[in-house]
Amino acid sequence: MSNNAKDSVASDLPADLAALREDIARLSDTVAGLVRAQADAAGATLKGAVGGAREQLSQAASQAQDSALGAAADLERRIEKYPLTAVLIAAGVGMALGMMSKSRG
Image 1: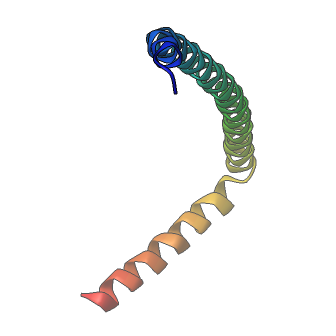
Image 2: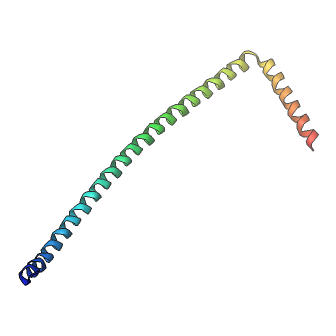
């Protein structure tokens, strides 16, 4: 190789390295932007799923509470309608529990 060719390659080398550095910097910025966009999308999807699950759980809890309140009201009405039966059932349950606890001790 002649001296002119070597000088030409040597003088182009810093410019080529600078261009390569700029290209790598742009590429890393682009990749970082893509990763950020994917993370934001995943976060939004997760928030939507958590919100949906929270809403379903809230509805289920509300339904369970309504059902329990309805059962309690029904039990109260039956006790008022049949007080003697309620007292006899309570006495029977009390005796059964007493017998079970007596046999353990």
